[in-house]
Length: 541
Ligand code: C2O
Image 1: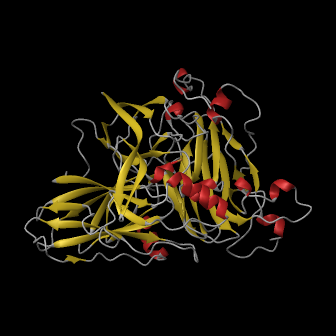
Image 2 (image 1 turned 90 degrees about the vertical axis):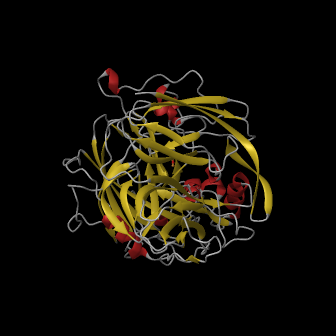
Image 3 (image 1 turned 120 degrees about the horizontal axis):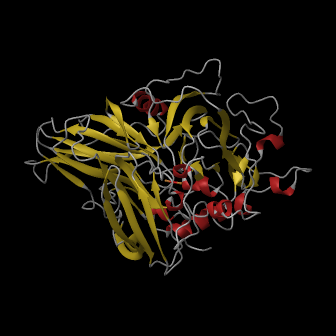
């Protein structure tokens, strides 16, 4: 096992895109940011120095952070932000982890520009479960705004409505020819005919889920969220923000220029979105630079079935690791509400976060960030920052799917709070995530920090234990699950990693509206089951 050192300088960088020159926040001047390369079981040490004017933290999305909760990165959950001029060193071990993940800023909407890939190779001498391809490429899907992303969040929250669409979708930071001044701003892969390529797909977008496809080429999924899958061949994939997927593509077409396209998947109706695609090229060596590209076909923006078909194809390569018994059966609704005041509802029920009218919640609790990090508050037993009474089942349930008989106005509203659910070390957890809401239903990419989980079931409509079908043999092992629009997903994990772990919708706008919750996982009995002390350079609030 070796140690990999990285130096991340968070800085302001001048960039020209879409006929516009502006400053964005980057790491080391790169957009997307630098790739973190490592091997399974390596130690990774990243010194982050904040030379930007904004508060910063970096989250290593999908890294389990076994006994290193302090390095997880979500602001006000495991650390206070790194302020301008300060630095903090993240240290963690890639315990049994390999594949593709991403890192991103985890404060305000800064991850709109501050993001990059994590590539973890298997240990030396350990083969891949597929023939290793000729070459590999990282493909990061992103969103680009002309407005400063930190200001954007403030403006959207103040507006009371949803976010505007991004000004461009991007592939590795490049919008491609569908956008202004971007004809030559397109990413390209040079293809040797007959060779196979591994594409490491990452969705680093802020507020949109995305389809991806390549003209005339099929993709074979071999890994999702950093875990091998049974090979599954498909024309298109869908990735929610935070999700990663490795696919194999063989250059088996005639010599030419083929589009790779990224476009929106928007399951909620009536929300403005950018229905044009970012384009990159899969271009055979020998193709004329002037040759026209064959267009990639994307599903239509509301094609729920296309999403289900990708999900149905995901199976863990290995069987037999799913917890068969469960100790804790949890049921969380996830949804969006418009907060209205109905007397005699207490005042706190009348407002969303930031005095807004929109509230997003889990079990009708809209998450409020504490003033200091929860992990610090928990570790140092500082009172008044959080409570341990997050309800394990909904207090109220607005049944969007059937229109419940008891949908009185009060039942549609959320309370604000910083509530956590406490798990004893080693608890085998099943969590049903149920999409609902009074505004609309929507496919929400729900991400759990500190764990991956088995997605043992999912379906449309309301979860019904009598009819739900579970796969306890080879379900996918993910860190982010797109809960089907108007439907449910069941996940299982064993609480074997002590710490304070955020769980939230990976649409940043929903996170800003409070669609989040926290698990506290207690220490076990052994020394190797106990949280270490906080690092000396941990930022102060
Ligand atoms: Cu990738 Cu809490 O996020």
